[in-house]
Image (cartoon, rainbow, N blue to C red; front, side):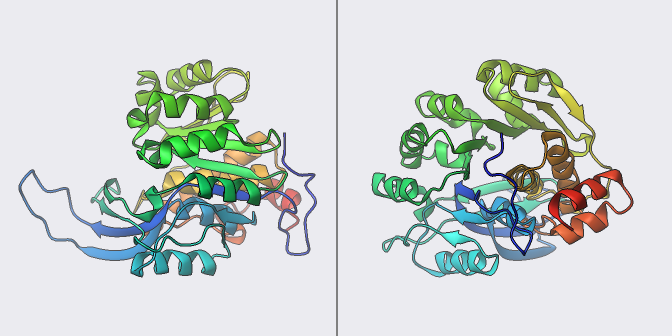
Length: 336
């Protein structure tokens, strides 16, 4: 069920399929703190950085593994919008829509505590102002074999949600659709979520999001329950951090794919690194098992680095996997 025939150009990139993100690239203000302050309290940040994040993390993770990537979300006019576009250009990501003139791109404050866990507060901007004209432009820009990634953040936004749901329902059958429901999974209106789930080829979520969608605490049970809810055409990836993930292929049974024990310094963007790597490896023609194992490795690599956009390049991933059968499989499949 690949979106292209696996032919590669001289650079090793897949020819045909691209990752098209119907999500939100915003600016992250990342503050490293020993712990979150108590209610009404304060705490000094040990380190503060300003970086592009949100859907940008998925795009870069896929792009660094050789899959062409396209940002099809909205973006604004102002210093944050300028920064997002500059970073997208630096990573070689194409932008579909023109910037909105009346508003800047939004931002997120991400607190990373001493254990590497992250907590967010988000201020919406131009990325939350999609229109039907934007949707028409995205549809016109799609190509056969493209992989469309949707974030639950956009589905939860009052303006974007209905536009995205309508757009997804109109996608041609040759387009594969992937959803990451995100932390706001339980805040997506059912009339928005239902048509998206009905069209998805894959849903990838973490354990908390799986619990919000199914009411199950156990990772395997949540993955199986979500797959049962979605039906036999849709696969499920339930990410379980260092424990790896549970995979339910379309119409199949839940299988555990082990993770990797590493010293985590920053979990911010780990799920995005997993998603981007999974999409890149599937999009470049690898089988499901290899794509999932590669995604687990990419996420493990990402948490050993500071910052949200820390997915590995192919060379970095191969070095991380040096001597393992997975490295040989990736080298053979991707022409390295």
